Amino acid sequence: MLPSHHRYSYSSIHDRPHYTWPKQRKLAVYIALNLEHFAFGEGLGASLAPGGPEPDVLNYAWRDYGNRVGVWRLLELFEELSLPVAVLVNSELYDYCPAVMRAFRDRGDEIVAHGRTNSERQSTLNEDGEQRLIIETTNTITQHEGARPRGWLGPWIAQSRITPDLLQEAGYTYMLDWCCDDQPIWFQTRAGRILSIPYPQEVNDIPAIAVRNTSATDFADMIVDQFAEMQGQAQHQPLVMGIALHPYIVGQPFRLRHLRRALNHIAERAARSEDLWITYPGEIARHILTLPNGIVP
Image 1 (tube, rainbow, N blue to C red):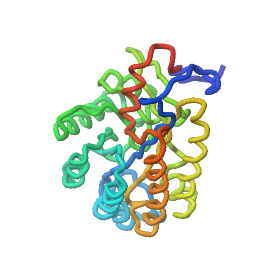
Image 2 (image 1 turned 90 degrees about the horizontal axis):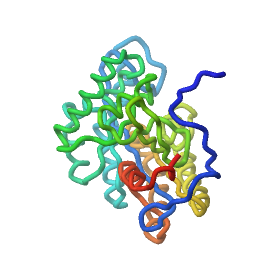
Image 3 (image 1 turned 135 degrees about the vertical axis):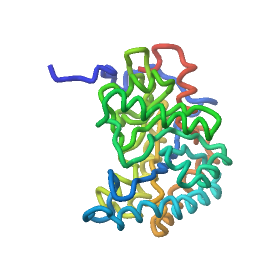
Image 4 (image 1 turned 120 degrees about the horizontal axis):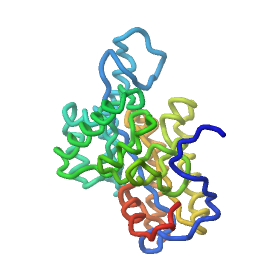
């Protein structure tokens, strides 16, 4: 027998009970905006070019462009198109650039916990260290937002063998780390269960652009094509489409121009279609919690 995580059992997407999103809608779409802060001269971080010895000024400054410039350009775009955004936030940003967090708070967007900083991975910590990371992140967000975050995405999508247990015990409703489905599924934990909401690793600017060198044009086309195909698939069962963005990547002007085209395409069709639900992952989780047991695998 191969080692297993023992969190969920196999379930074919063709063999599941049918349900719909609120108002009989069929495709749920959400935008996940990753807001991240990095240590200077140490720790982890995405690279624009191969880094030299620390301090790695080139890559640090490239990432910081996202918090100083890119995020504000994206905010203008979201406002222009009246699109809600789930903000996946490193809690260190509340000290570093509180104006950014204030801007999304004023919009009423959902705040999703994304660890303290993307300079670390929680999977390398022992249980006490990981539990402390979760508690510190949760307390910081709660203090500033006036409400606890309900969702979690680990820095670098990194989980230890007990992360789902610790998140459920800390009061989290859902997590975004597992890209194994197009519908929400339940994960078993040592004290109950936690929902896994689909989060994209394909329609995601880091794997697509920073890793595979996809062009800005092609990334926008990926969004449009994913949306069109999932619209058709969702006529038969409810699906979730996420779009994962990072301001230091798609906030660059030449990429933003093409992202604008893709998001405008979605916004225009959402305005004319009763089948589309442009929402937050937390609202998807809230709806799933209203369904009878056994509907969601």
